[in-house]
Length: 377
Ligand code: AMP
Image 1 (cartoon, rainbow, N blue to C red):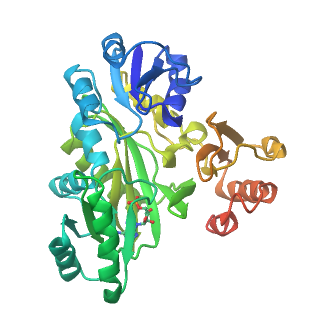
Image 2: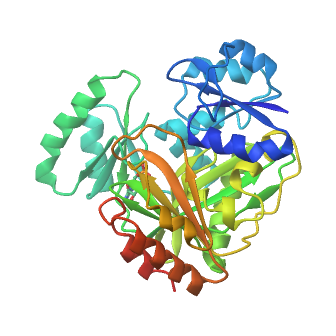
């Protein structure tokens, strides 16, 4: 089968690698250059978008910030999964909040801000502290402001007003600050028959707003049940087909949705070595109408992101249970360049291997890993 992926980054690349054994070939649409490219080599394939859609059996996406005319074109083909509505909901925090409300799942209380009166009303209605997030094009903590003290409000409004003035379509979603203990995510798939398969909940650690480490958390039934219930509510509400990721805040054992990603997700990369069928293959199975695979955890696993580095010490490859995944990208400060998966027979061994890995990695490029390792028991 031929699958066209909107977006030509590492997620399309890993879909391509996972699809090859199933004879699924991937071409990718690079939104920046408006070109169809090979997802591994980035070589231009010479077909325009319209022909690429016509040639494909299935169209899908690896990210949600896609121009609306492109989404409309794909939707009109009748072979776009998870489809326009889901991708738009992932790319616009206003639509995302509406979706969460209509699916009846808990998320932080919010107020939409388009002008100064809305800004003041948000503070009055929700109280402080608040997090202000750009409705469009926000990811990895970009386009966010915090307000803790009322006396900082006037200066913050100046910043937000200047930001809103740059784009007519833009708005701000003001959200109550959630004093969470942990950030978690659930990755799962839904197929066209409405069948669901979800992976174990993942615990996520961020450094400066960017994901650093994800750890599969098996065995917490209460969290798994809550996450699964919210996952099915959102996936069913969207009549979703494909892999969907939902990020949560955990507050005293209760989950609130932070955001959704209508695609394969960075916090699910551990599934490449830790799960029976990885998230990339699972997504392709779902969108191609193939049976979903088992999402069972085959061994305790974690993932470490490689940010802004294009080399790692070679001896890490000698560690048992370690797999290195580069994305073939040009080095840039903070850029997601690759990731390392570590797996083991049990959690104690995973912690031991993680500590061995940390000892080999430069602390400056991989900050805070030691604190994260302490959480593994
Ligand atoms: P986001 O891009 O929405 O995932 O936000 C980036 C990070 O900011 C999250 O991973 C959280 O650590 C933090 N954050 C976002 N929203 C809130 C909130 N309402 N309360 C507390 N922290 C938040």
